[in-house]
Length: 430
Image 1 (cartoon, rainbow, N blue to C red):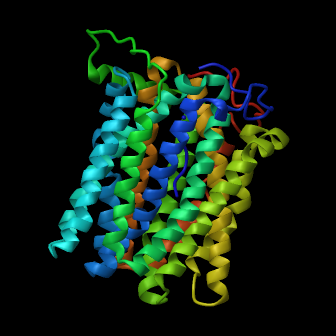
Image 2: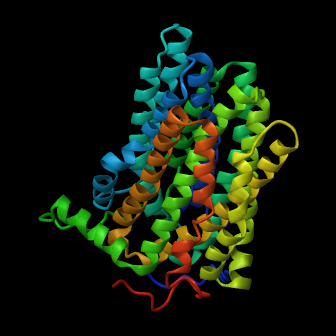
């Protein structure tokens, strides 16, 4: 459950009704939504099935589970910035299709090795690292293509639909993942994710809108283009605040997500189905948040709602660290739902904002820079979870995550976003 994805021109859709017809009337956007649905459903299944494969099938330690989660996001740190500059030079859709097909082959190797009785933790490490590299290219290309596909004046509407799909997929995927693990085994459940990426590639191939070739200077150097993207993001006062708040959110939630399956299986002895339902509550929270984002922004102001909601949910992280059998488990599930509701609100508003304030020629680099920051924080969170789980305890890692969740509103509060009703206007880079 992660935070934030986003870009020139004013975007008032976050606070006022969109007068244009629904973006769902576009056949190409419906194909994109369909691809996102099947892909994210499979991803939600494997996000539970792969760590449970390590825990239940390979009997991995907390440190190994933490390393597995770290490697799944490490690619954003290794190739994220060059990928953004590269994607700005070429058409985006072929990159997305190639990344989908690569993920089909990589994830399909897990159940194949399990059937041959040769699956190892080292193979899981390699698979999640390479799948992460394909995901870097796919995500940067997808975020950069959306403004051209739907138009900048419908970005908030389009992102609301995409975040809703993400949330519903997590609700269904986590639940289905838990039951598939219980019914078939964790490695067999990974097949669903591999099949979903194949379905995504087929739907993307059917999009008919001609994608313009990006304008690119032949004498431009990759290093200079990367630095230009970094200067744009970190020189912009609101983008900088959004990046910092998102990084804090992702690091804290990753601490919790990495250690909760270990707590549930080893200390509490919960069934796979119960674990799946617990994490499905997070998907429900994102769904509620994505559906509420535009109304809350209209009532409270788009910038104000970001820090107000963060402050409101701050106390609930502690309930995650107190998770136990009985009523404490229900309270922890409620806290997870409320926390992820705030993530859903953030995703709609901040993704649309980032896409709306970034010129076309910088979209790939902006998205890559943000992805490096946000996904890099996931890698740090996973590594920290494994370290704390080994050296201290699983609950120590959860308490550190809870402390982080209580402070994510601070960067927004001390930025120009604090009192703004619109996420557009005279907020220019310094």
